[in-house]
Length: 569
Image (cartoon, rainbow, N blue to C red; front, side):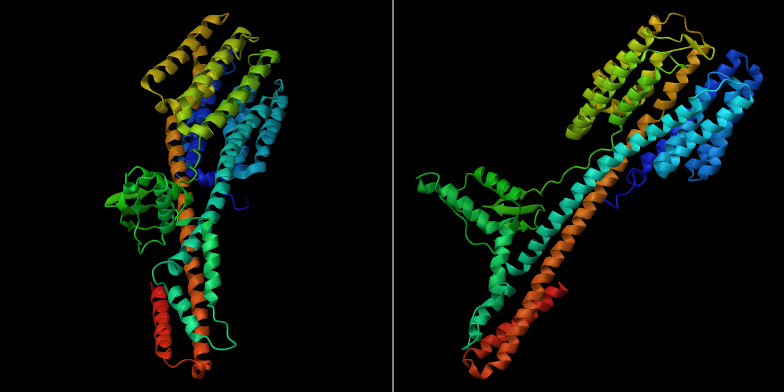
């Protein structure tokens, strides 16, 4: 679909909020980690480390406020600033440099969502500059300045592509629905002029036999067209009068008791079009009414084909609901968040982090990908009702990941801090829980939070060493990803509603345009046929029976008068 809007337009509020929030939260968490590591490893005096961290945090907050007001900084400038930022902290810490490298991850995620392929410059430039600075500073080189910005890029790409694919599928469905609605509305527009009691088409069709002379066709040119219209309409809808007669015949033939027979007198609104679903609903309603004898039917409120129709049958109100439309899928980040958690499981094997054997992390990642696919399929079918089972399965997988990574921990310490691999599962279950918690019953909310605490306590007990106060600074990472997740859910719901409204508005506009086009088609046909009848009257006037001339002229004048009224109406 060439004109597919980018996800930053469809989910404008949530995309902007997410990019700003991730920028601030991740960078502040990285600042805290860098300062604590610098103090613990002794690479900077505590006062200097805290002052540098405070200055950098102030810069991050100022940039966040600038972005929140709609400010923009060119990618080249931001890339240069981030490369200098990452390399300065990396050469200060020496090893490991994972925390400094994560400073550039938000820019990579933002760049891939907004600029596409140009985002590859972020890991390449940041990694290249940092490697050069480390080499010049006599520090050990590391792949982290390449890996973690690339990880941010992959996260942004996964989230945007997932939502974009959901939007693309809905837009394709909406396009097909609009085409069908337009076609149905064209038929409805044609029938609004051509079908009914003594319509303009009826008047003109009955006039043609009066113009019959030798050598001229007797039939009206509108007769064949009207027959084709009936055939076309039969494939998409049914007239109210036809639907009533079909039900009447079926009902009266169902038993030998003549006292229960029903008769529907002719109604001037018998040409009202009903969709197949409305015909079925009408039959169900009539079956439930226990009718007998003569039952008057009147149209209380008519709508174009597929719209809500309100009837009065034997004095009772009958509402035929509008045809349902496919619902707009929610902009739900649950499945891609679970998949990102699976990618994070592989990070346990990173040599500078937990050094968990790949034989354990690869199956964990594959399990997460399968879980994400299952969650996607369930959410597509059930929407928000799927959040409870999806969250339960995600927490169970997160607990497994935390237990396995803690039990197989290879690096007990890194950067002067005790490794806490079980905190990884909070990086994605934390925001997932914050987004889904509102859809759970109170009992399930308590159970979910209790499970999180149980996993944390159990895995902390499995650690071979005790945890110091400095080690607790790593809690900033799950907090960085969880804070603001509930607000993101609000914005996702709002963007979903706005997207649904835009799809519905386009559908209604297509139906309205089709109805007007259908009316215009009939009016042009009638105008052409009326002009031909007037020309034939002028040419064959002397050959026609004089008795018929006043009636012919009256009918043609009536046709012209109704044409003017219909065009102005």
